[in-house]
Structure formats: structure tokens, C-alpha cells
Length: 231
Image (cartoon, rainbow, N blue to C red; front, side, top):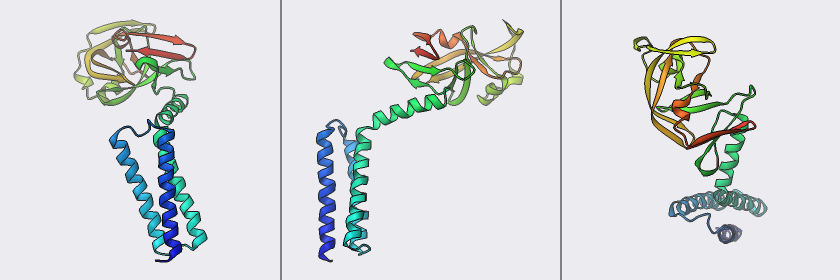
């Protein structure tokens, strides 16, 4: 092995070690759990092995090796910084997702969930119903969660065999509905089980999230173009 290669390996090792030590002192809470420490160690080992392989096989000259060593150290810094600010990055991603896709629930204070109004001014939310993603129009005037026939079929209900024995009077006239129960309805961090619902007897553009869900929450309020729901 050439002496410059040994020097580069030593510099890379010292650089990575110094970087980890500095960031550990700067962000003492970033790697509290043993799992996080193991993951970081694995990532640094991979970087070190790959970098060492390039150097040992003589693929660079001295100047090229120094440049690539700086790249590996920079990658190590990004990994450590990613661990340090992972919660902030996740929060930023959730906020950006809420702006681009208003039907996606955003986590609010105290375990609450925030939904942003769409361009039409209505609140549409995507919920997980029995593990299936279903988009609902939030309707405080609906007594039940109302499923469109199409969404009911997605959830495994045999619409043709349901008993449409309920009568609802709406702004569009009288409609019938078939009572069903939903095992689990999840909106962000809010999870309700055994939720009363009905399948609409006629086609609908959108299922409705009514009071059989909203009435079991701690509360909900609208401020501007945002609705906050609390468990």
C-alpha cells in the first residue's frame, strides 16, 4: 500500500470521528436510543468501507483521493444531521403535504388533527376505513357516516344484499340507506372503532363524514380555512 493511501485513510477516519464527536456534543439528544446509535454506526461503516476500497485499489491520485474523502465526510455529516433534525424534517414534510394535498390530515397540538379546506371551500379528508383509504366530505349536517355504493363495495360490502330500510330527508330530496358498522375509522392520530354508518341507496360523488363519527370526538372547530378535530 502506498503511503499517500494510508494518509488518506487516516484523514478520512479522523474526519468522520471528529464529525461524529462534534455533532454528538452539539446535539446530545439526537442519538439517545441504542437502535439509532446502531443505525448510525452501520451507515458510517458502509461509508468507510466503500471509501477505503476506492483508496486501497488505487483508483485516485492524491488530489482525487482528497476530493473524494471530502465527499465521504460530507455524506457522513448529512447522515448525522438527518438523524438530529429528523423530527423537524418530518413535520415540515407533513405541512408541505397538507398544503399540496389538503385532504391529508396534519397533526395538530395535543393529538388533534387539522384539515385544510380545498379550493371549493369544503373540507374533504382521507380516512382509513377498515384499512382502506376513503375520501369523505365532512358534513356536520349528516347524522351518520354515509358511504357511496362505490366506496361500500371497496370496503367489501355486498351492496345488492343490503337492506335499505332507512329513510333520510336531504336538501336533494328523500333517499334510502342501509345500516352497516365500520370496524375501524382512522383520521391521522384519531382512531374510532365500531362506527355506525349507512350505505346510500343512490350513487354519490363523495361519501360523507357525519355525526356518528364527529359526535364521538372531543370537539371540532373551524378557523379560517382550517378545521381542527380533537380526540
